[in-house]
Length: 332
Image 1: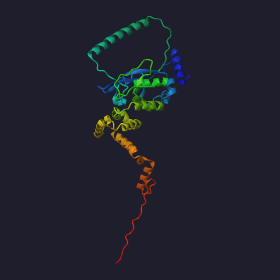
Image 2 (image 1 turned 180 degrees about the vertical axis):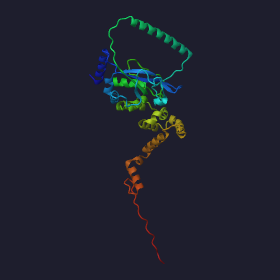
Image 3 (image 1 turned 90 degrees about the vertical axis):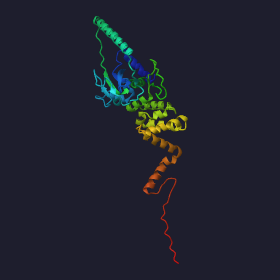
Image 4 (image 1 turned 180 degrees about the horizontal axis):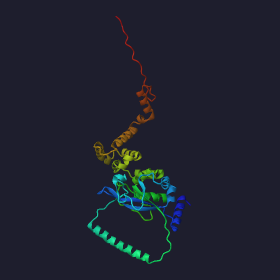
């Protein structure tokens, strides 16, 4: 039996006696562009042993009080951030794993009011049934409630699913496709590879980080690489910038790049991209590497340094400085 299957079997056995849930994670799931914030907390329920086995981050998280991670806080009956936080506080405004808030119509309001009335009636009916029923002693299992303020519900769910099953499914990039995500109840929940890369870097999970980076690379083409170069995530992670520059260079003469590249330069020139200088610097380095490889070689760098210091260069080109001969004076 594989280690992964043994872990799943252990979780199933725990579920039989009600010992499956140790921690409840609460995460935001919706972005409101109108309000400029993230809202709609949703809960995920996890077994500590399954998480700590597959991640040092969770091992330390469950032993800390308070948490060293400033974006993770204890969540009791109420927290000031429960109603939502700004996109700036969230830290990743363009997170693809956040659902977009739908504008509410008058018809939606009426439907919500009817649903609320039905729910209230059901709660009242259930309470009366409980009051009239004799019940045995109930077992109360204490759980830890944690609010995570910098990660989307969909990303965290995919992370927990991966730690449980060692399976991960990545959705297409938004620049690649606008098709809706499809998720079967029995399958792994899809997530954005960019969102997962950000999270994997945070929790220092190298294997998951590599998987997410590979998924991003396989999604880059001449049709979306310029858009991805402009994203805020690219400005934060050098590995993503290097990869996107490589894809751009490979497609530099394609019609799409030839047509759209000037618009990227205009945005950089107008200070529209904070990491615009990094894009041009990396592209220049890639061009030098392709056409003038000796310039970037260690030998060439050493020769240049020696020349600046006035010492004899040791590179492929050696120069010997000689004092000019004094002119010969001839008398007549």
